[in-house]
Length: 343
Image 1 (cartoon, helix red, strand yellow):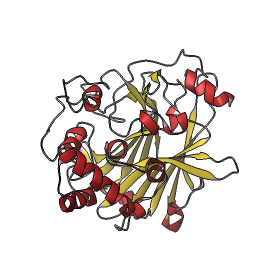
Image 2 (cartoon, one colour):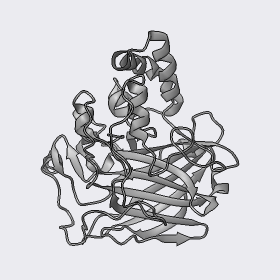
Image 3 (cartoon, rainbow, N blue to C red):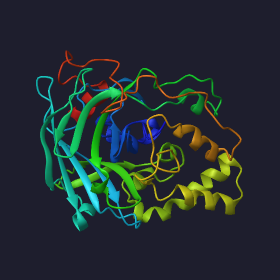
């Protein structure tokens, strides 16, 4: 898995699939390297614990979906893109995209300069794209581009090449922006989801950038998901302990390798081609193989699964969903979701 199922025992954060961050991608626009594509995926269409389909409602209206961008290397955001969604009514939902620059980008809130207002969320296979000025925006159900042998990962890394995600969907937030909107040099990115607290204000429930490590290496899960990259040094010891156990690293080497995984950000220089883990991440990069080599200290190098064949050559680049949700009941929920709502 990537960042899917980062709640306790491979569940969802707060039991809500809509809040589950899965993957972050950043790469130059194909055919026009003066622009960049940023993709934040959330809400897997199927759960592991409990197993089965999740709600057909794409995004949580009571949540905030945020992309953070650090432009000067201090792991503190200087730019934030924030997305809020309307209530899901009669099978439809809309999105508002805001941008915040400067010190406020490091804060928690849903204010900011409106870039897109009332964009239609895609429920079916057609990608409903909203252009505005030099930005393009998409939000909606898509085919999950992540590929991994999940059962093999859970079975002591005994991989058979069975791609759990081959027929799964996910909800994508896709931005096309000019490189100038990101600054003039390499940036560091991460994504997070927040929900409203019982006493008001926003509570961060998910965050991350690099695949797999938050699910497999984290010991203090709640603290990690609620944390910030600028303070990720406190998790190096826990990461190192896990690497000693799984990869047979010496204590010193485990600590060194853990330091390369934290802070949990995705480094991206739009002036260079993207390739994970060196620069950004494309939809076809085998990020799980990269992680598994680190986890096992090179003893296991692949899970025998490759990129999906339904990726698009044009915006929003993520393939159409396997299942259209246009005709689904607008408020259909999983059994777990119903139980949570009744509490």
